[in-house]
Length: 607
Ligand code: F6R
Image 1 (cartoon, rainbow, N blue to C red):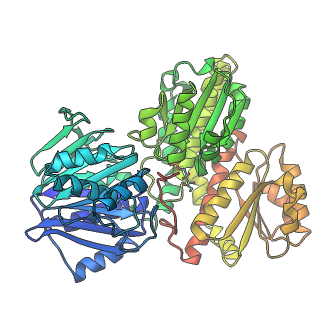
Image 2: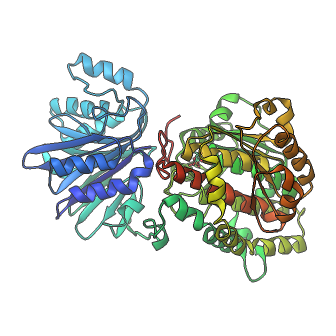
């Protein structure tokens, strides 16, 4: 969590810093702040709340200079408040930090014993105080920073400016991302590359334990031992599609609409469109050697793993475990040596997933990750990784990354089936041919969902909702319920429809709307029986099904969302769309902040 942006330039930097923070707001948005270095020394402005509060403060109390650091925060240690907002500083150094300093109680005690006083409740303030103590011992800024970071346990991305070296920004990282950009006006530092796109043309990523010394003309990088590291600057390529909202009201809506394109890009990356075959070289070579698959992830990515379990079982005939990362790493389950551990993460930075990956590596498992951010920590630490081709996802509620994950997982299950000889050439061609209809089918579903706002109106005043589905529709129900609760703040539960009678049916009355996901197929009849059970107990049922499913259930439902007839293989991908759109429209009607819902952040780098 937390976003860092810094600039050293030939031009004034305040508006550039605020622009950078605006792009990084998805990483945290409970407070923000900047420090500018100018003729008056280190000048700080901080504000509690969303970035607008800082902009208002800067309009009332402006500050300018050619060098500065900035931060947008998601609170971990210490409540969201101006006092806990970054940058943290002394009169000699100001620091912005992303990460967690695990040994901060010990460091704090030692600093306080030496007379250094904490003004905030944060772990981050340890860093400027450690640096200041080193400066007070007579060290240079660079040595003071190097010594300070050598004392930190945990993870950090840091940018620091010094009163005694007013033309330089220092940056350091261990476990949290940091990228340096070079532009016409100077150099910039950011937590991600997209935030650099307005100001930089080239970039390089800082690696763990490296320290960068950056002036307007130079970038000097050294490793932990102080030796120079030479790094190639690469052109910064951000697709037009990834920039801004492109006319949509919210990033989330834009990202929902981008899904057909994500499917097309994914298919073209992993399949040959001329022969309708998988590109085996796009997958790790030894997939068929494994006897068990252990999928580990958090949140929406975990639900993608739950859907995919059934594909791996069906097409690759491999037993699959699916675990929540924060549980898996403490479970101490026995591993069979031929297990492939598969980690799914949009950001590639999720602390629990990363820790689970490290734990699996220690157990000697082969670790493969499915990631949307190629430069992420999980990409660096996995034995191999597969890419989702979702592009930048800015809306905090995951949409296109989820369907991107689903499609890659489906293709991977087919590749495993192919590699082990269980999937023959004819079946492969037929399945891939069906998948190539996905972009068009998805676009059709999204376009035909205009009526969904009527359904949304019926949910907007509800306090609770229940989502039900069977088979693959159960993890979709979990995902639909998660989308609704995180952006509209309506309590939503999800159950396998068949489990209802074992307890949750007690919750059903006329105040409990039920969203029933019932695609055509062998489970449909049973799901519709469950639908009758809830409707006869007064529930208002919203059925998501095809035309004939809706017809069959007509007397028992209040509303319906029709999904066009489709091949069974495409169902989980297509049935996700009305769930995303329903949550989106309910949130819009409630007037919540769709892209930045309360208490959340996009990249969860704390355990
Ligand atoms: C929900 C959502 C989260 C993430 C979870 C894992 O819409 O986005 O539940 O899926 O925080 O994040 P990643 O996939 O980045 O590991």
